[in-house]
Structures are given as structure tokens and as C-alpha cells.
Image (cartoon, rainbow, N blue to C red; front, side):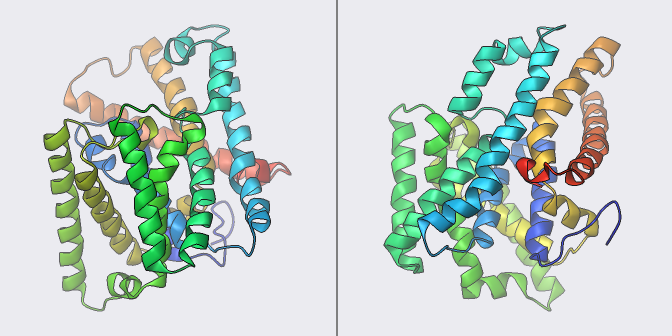
Length: 343
């Protein structure tokens, strides 16, 4: 496809589709729609770490690793984050809307520097550290599945123990990165294993449908069980994992469901979103949604708290996010600064 919705070549199509699905799920999760948001949070962030693991290639040296990852993750983190900070700094000139949520402009700048699950861009900081950790996991494990998974599981258990003993979010989401690297590890070895072909390649549509249904059902059941057992669900950005075993089962089965659906759905808009997710992911919640909710409040729109009003508000916000941020992405892609924003 060429023109406005240009799709990049030499990409793994099903990964881009799954990433596009994941992006839409993230938006739905932030819209806080009843029931839908609760389901999305059972697996949407583990999905992104898993998909990043699917396309990861181990560099020859740590220097080569940093040379590749700093421009792709570390630098975009700062530029995307500074735009969010400037948005709130500007907003603070005529409203206390941002201050009520995040404190003063200086507080927000400090939180951007320390990064403890702050704004949507916490994911970029976490993914950067996650990949650093995984680089050494593969080194220790000799790039073999069994020893690498053993190290990965131990590291994730260390993070869970840290939370269980009252630990708080660490700078640059080191704690969340220790959990994330497990899902990253799953994605990496999923592609290298025989499971990859068995799960994705199937000529039997009925069998594929039943597998999708099974994984979806397992995801919902395990997610419900997690809340019943612990009173909490999964929210990686704030270090909330509920019952760790139920959470892991729910997340992995949700990932399997999306991966299987994505393998048979080469839908070009989803491919586009998967290939151009960075700006939409970073700015939809902390800029566009905040601005929209402010306008709704000022104009008296969607004041009714009924279920129908919430869904209408969600549909309107979902549509406006894409209407605003897809063209914004395309405009930035045409500038010489596009790499600074990860596009």
C-alpha cells in the first residue's frame, strides 16, 4: 500500500497485525470502558513484550546492542516524553487540570527523569531495560531455551518476591523489566520453537477456531481467578500482579489468542497501526484523551454516567484519537526529526 497509509516492507506481517491489535486494546484499556478494560488489562502489556521478543535478534556484542537500541528506544523515550511534559506545562498556564493529576511542572519533569511507571512512555523505559536484561539472560543461557528460561523465571520470581515484601516501583521500572523479560523470553523462543508452526500454521479452520476459543476462555477464567484469589488484577505500570500464577496463565493465554487471530487476519489498517504504533501509543492517553476529557467537561458532553453514555464517550474518544494521531504520525514521518520520535 502506498500514499497516506504507507506500509513498510520486510516486516513480519503477523507480528505487525498483533501489534496493531495490541495498540487498539491499549486505547480501549485507557478508555476505561466497563468490562472491556478489565479484560484488556489481563494481557495487553505482556503481549507487547512478547511481540518484541518475537523479532529480537541477539547482537554480537553489548556495544552493538546499545548502538541499535539507544536510537530506537532510549532517545524516543525522551522526545516523546518531553512533548507530553510541554503539553501539561502549557495547559498549566490556564488550568490546574494537569497539576491535579501529576503535580507541578517540576514534579512532572522529575518523574520523567526518574520514570516510575509514569505516563504511557513507561513502556519504552521498561522495554529498553528488559532487552538489556534479556541480552545477558541469553549470554548466561548460551542462547538455549532451557537454561535461558531457567534464568528468566528466577529473575521474574525475584521481582514478584520484591513486590510481595512491600517493594515499590524502582527508577526506570527495573522491577517491571524483570517481569517483562519473561514474556520477552517467551516470544523469542516461541519463534525459534516448533510451537511457532503448530500454533500459527493450520489448514483446519475449525480446529483453529476451537483453539482460539480455548485460549480466550482460559484467559478470561484465569483473569477472573486472579482477582478472586488476590483481589487484584494485572497492571505492570504500577507493580500490581495479583496472584502471580493465575496472572501468568491469563496473560500467556491472552497472547496466544491474539497471535492466532493475527496469523489469519492480514488486515492492512492493523498492519499500518502495528508498524506505526509509537506516537499513537505514547500520546493517545496523556495528551489526546486528557484534552478531550477537558473539552467534554467544559462543553457538558457525556455528563451522564449511564452505561450507554460511557460507551458513546468511548466510541467518540476512540475515533478522535485515531483521527488526530494517525495524521500526526504521518506528518512527523515526513520531517528530518522522525527518528527522534521512533518513527
